[in-house]
Length: 180
Image (cartoon, rainbow, N blue to C red; front, side, top):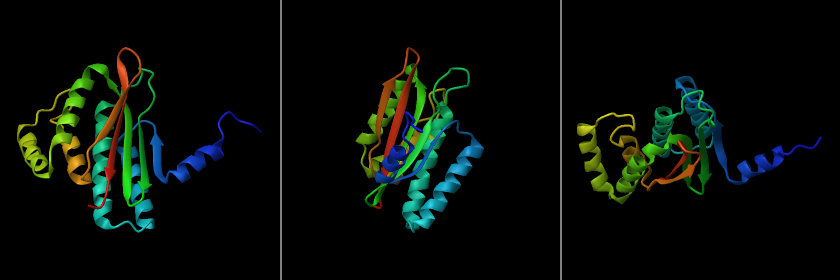
């Protein structure tokens, strides 16, 4: 039996790249709880220090909330969002991907680019200010999730947008969590 997709190749790629969890599909509260429970079980099995585990969960939850906010409504025939968690040496990578309306891209880029310029103390102050002045809009809040991801991970956010037609692009967000 020959297939165009070689399952062993997929398994090998995931194993070689130390992928702990990967999920593609619609995210709702039930699925988020399941993903968190599966991730927690896996990290406990691997004896990951509690402090690092907390950082990882915080970043993962912020990424999941971002997906839920911007998840494309049914009927628009786009691919489902995804979450991937992998291990790299003593760090973990949380990567999310979801479609976003093209008109929202510039605001998201500006928020992430600005947050990535801030040092630890500036992040702390910006977080306080953003919380006090937070206004929720159709683009999201004041970037509190992005701020929190950088604060908890100790690393800058990496991102990329892949054009997918006139109205949407696929947004990849990567956060590296280390024990620093």
